[in-house]
Image (cartoon, rainbow, N blue to C red; front, side):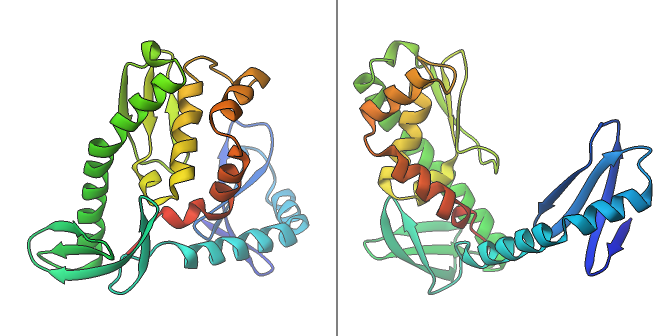
Length: 230
């Protein structure tokens, strides 16, 4: 059910939680509240936060327009090199040249373009990144702790490391600048020694990735662009 507070439309999700929180995603405002929270109290809460909500919605709208477009003639980056996207009809495949990234689809519709490119990107990640991870693991002297590399596209994480030595990477990092890709891999490899974000962890990151703050800054400012759309 959609509610309104002045010019703000929002949905209420009630649960056993103890506090009220506002979540904004994909242009939608969601209020999460305890089950017995009165409607008028929620309305007042939203009203108090209306300037913050408006700011978040505006920032999200700007970011939405900046996301990589998988349309003919658009620019995209792959392994640090800028490519012009070409979308043509043909056998489902992606061809890479010095200047172009050609996405061929039997049916060159938006959802098909997305599916073909997504599958190709995952294949490229599996082909290119495990060797890079292994090479860097020797540089960091954690190769004995590394068990395998897997890939998962998730909006919550660029990478993950388990206590069993599994490094999980998001294949979208192939669309980032090379210094960002290297940083994200080194970040996860450092977790093979320090399963936390302690001072020792960050000292290790800095030792093997000087200026890593630049990569962190790039992710914060540009990471959303990698969530390509047709």
